[in-house]
Amino acid sequence: MYRALYRKWRPAVFSDVAGQPHVTETLMHEVETGKLSHAYLFTGSRGTGKTTCAKILAKAVNCLHPVGGNPCGECEICRGIDDGSVLDVIEIDAASNNGVDNIRDLREEANFTPARAKYRVYIIDEVHMLSIGAFNALLKILEEPPSYVLFILATTEVHKLPPTILSRCQRFDFHHIPPESIAARLQYVAEQEKIDLTDEGAVMIARYADGALRDALSLLDRCSARGETITEEVVGACAGIAGKEYLFRMADCIASQNAADALRLIGELHASSCNMERLCVELTEHFRNLMVTKVVRDPQNLIICSKEDLRSYHDQSECFTLESILHVLSVLGDMTANLKRGLDRKIETEMAVLRLCTPSLSTDPDAMLRRIAELERRIETGIVPAAVPEIKESVPVFVEQTPAPEKEAVAAPAAAKSEPTPQKPPEPDVKAPAAAKSENALYKLWPEVLLILKETSKPLSGILVGSTATVSGKVLQINSANAALPQMLEIPLYKDAIRKAVKKISGLEMQISVRDAKQEAKKTDPLQDLISKINNLKESEG
Image 1 (cartoon, one colour):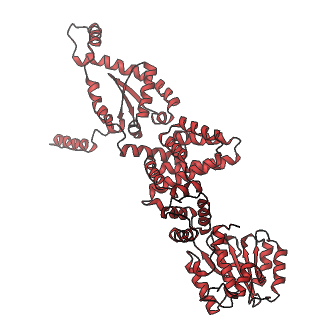
Image 2 (cartoon, helix red, strand yellow; image 1 turned 180 degrees about the vertical axis):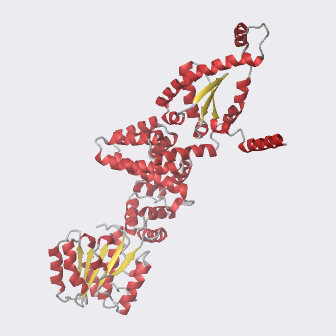
Image 3 (cartoon, helix red, strand yellow; image 1 turned 90 degrees about the horizontal axis):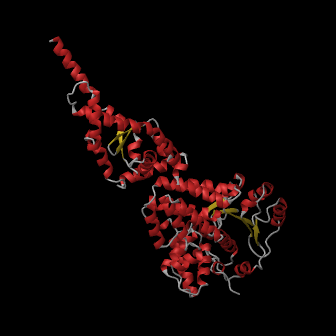
């Protein structure tokens, strides 16, 4: 019968254990010198070698001919432990034997001397699953066991063990196995099994395994079943990390704030039976990768993907600010919680995506930081049109320009009728009524413009609170003391919103400019005024 690779290639000696030299060297020295502890605690994440080292240690302490702290693997004890005929090494799964009665049975058995081996070894896997009563029952014999009893406890969640248990064990922490160690082991196994594995494929498997050699061997087993050369593409297809184009499409929709395409994409995924919770998890992982790409100079060791996908991550991360990515991750975190208690998961997903595509709908600090960061990025990168400053500088020209001939012809008789003398009035007096008429007319309509903006662009409406407006020719000049308004109108979207609102009210196409009331207030230098007053005072005294 075919045996899985992780079972077939499980290390038989400490020397074969990959990536845990701080554990294996210490255990080999203890076995060689005979300075053994009565209780060991092996902790660490899955697939790092805890149970493997426990079995090797159980054989090494009972081996008739140990070699440098390793079991020989040839004596009757080693072979008996491997085939299960030696009953002095007992493996207990604490997940299914976690009651007080199970530990009491263990205590009664521990009173009997070993039948064939030197030590009776108890390997308790997933020991954190024991109940409180079971821990209390284990405590006494763990503290003072018979001289021929050895305990080896293994767990992935050491924080769940009582301090009284921890203090009575010699603890060994198993680290994540480095990717290069996993890749080297995979190449060795592939060579022995006649599997065609490329170096890039081995590295890809090692990165996907996340420090667990057992997971890496299982994935190699799955890839080898395809019967072809194992490359990065084959590993990506078998591991399920390929074919995620829809995540990049969704991220593009969020970056461009295209809510319509985002909703259509959700509809397509839902129609193809995509689970909305799974989509949320994948989007979170996608934006996590964008965040890493944005922050880390060499992210290839932190992101599990092909080289092509890594380039795609890098290109797409340029479309986001770090604040935007953090805001997206925050919304996706809330979406995960809402999906579990919401009635319709598709609607919850659509609502979350709408918030991501329309930051103005959110008023939380993360959304505000995102909007500010986007504005700063557009200004710094030069996305703002260069014609905006020119319009501001040309405003005074429009204010002082001569009215059109038709208007002047109409205004002149009116001015002549109002003057008692036949003398022609000065030119400034002729201009003043026309300019005043235009400014007063639009000033009366400005509140109606603000009402329209309140419906079409709430952020802009909030900035324009307390503002007024005047017209000079074809230029609409906004008077506001809000310092954020000039920067906001550098974004074409907001300037177009004002232009459309003005056209809807008055039917006129206007150019939009801003006059900062604070800047005009600063035109008069207080220091110069003070100097002038002092000089006038001196002249009067002189």
